[in-house]
Length: 570
Ligand code: PPS
Image 1 (cartoon, rainbow, N blue to C red):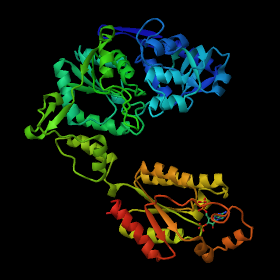
Image 2: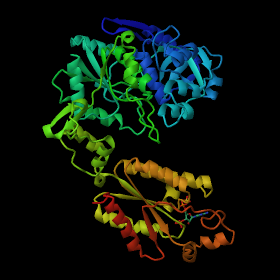
Image 3: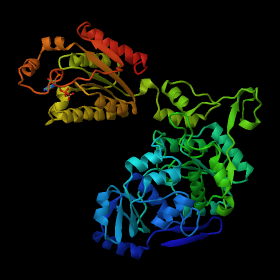
Image 4: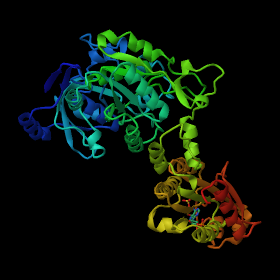
């Protein structure tokens, strides 16, 4: 374990074992029980090992944990607002009970650190949620994590690091606190203002960070969290590519970019304080803190989780102790009359201001609308457009569902031919029989087998759509829940058009192409859809085809029309 003192940022503690000790630990580790870390624990471990979470020496023991919950302080009195805990399941708890050392590994089994076992206890996670996040509502992402995903036991103890969790992306932009401090020192930057972000940055952000840096006469560090952010956020690969482009618009040498492998908790005021401590460890002297800093937004009923300026207030109350300055984030807006950006408090009441929200931007990109130059920079928009192409360039799935004999396969074949005629790309067809031969061989028609079959189809379709491909699926898919799971999964990647192939049971039975209805009626086949197994009618399908009244051409054309109306087909 090594401690580094730096003239600018105070002490930071790196938790790596020396090379000799590492070799000893590696050979001893074969006798230690292992714990495979989750994605969030890996982020925490990385920041513990590299000193980003200095002065912590490992995952919190119970006294420190209690102190953090009650007073935002470790038992020694040091300010630390966020519980950094190693949560484990009951099964893991029993497996490791009685051992002094635990090997911490990643998913692939790589040995990352040895934990010297301290306390093992069962926390009151509801109390933790209330004390740390001010709510027990699972609408708060960190509370949802605590209640629904975290293990019920906490394991505390000091760490001896073997190696950092591996990364393979943006290696030139990943720095440890020591590396970043050295970089600032070599560039002669004694004052550094950090800007925390989990979103793409546009002109307003550029203007406000520019102003903030000039106001406090400091170098600007764009320091995005790339560990875990709020569910639904834009992926970090896209964000980082866009930050790199944004950097081109700052005067040379004024700003730099470094990635922070932080798993955010969206904990508002406490999180802001935590962010300041982390940034100090990375050699920064100032932190830009805005309205609702690191807040998760509002609850479904519109109530905010935190007051808009609670984070700024809490931070200000601790700046002296932290030796970090808060730079209040003054939101700047575009004023078209003067074609300039101004802080909102300098805009006259009758002056028109313009802004585009993140949601609106996503829908503009999806519709292929031009993004105005006053809002963002061409390079930044270009990067976002690559990830969010207009609908005509996105993939889509047409999901036909209906009784056996309703006409799904016939429509699917006609639709495939029409799409191949119209599009210059392949069109995959995941028809019931094909799927049951290649993807779901061995599965039967029990409720659980059908669910597995239908969700497998949804998974494969979502992969095709993710790669901007086109796929037609045609299983019976009798249960609403499976269709809903598929819809959610596919809509994340592109288009999902559900087609209810609606033919009355009598009609399907009369057609009885395969003679299966007759067998089902005779009791020779059990659990036949529509006879003695339910078909749950889709509530909001995008298209309904009445195959007892329409020709197959007409049904296929209804789907084509819907695809055109929703702009997936141009
Ligand atoms: S499901 O429910 O979505 O998993 O069904 P799917 O994979 O589409 O398979 C439906 C075809 O299997 C034949 N078959 C049955 N259908 C319904 N219920 C039972 N018990 C059953 N046993 C066999 C039937 O021929 C279905 O084909 P289609 O093309 O739909 O007529």
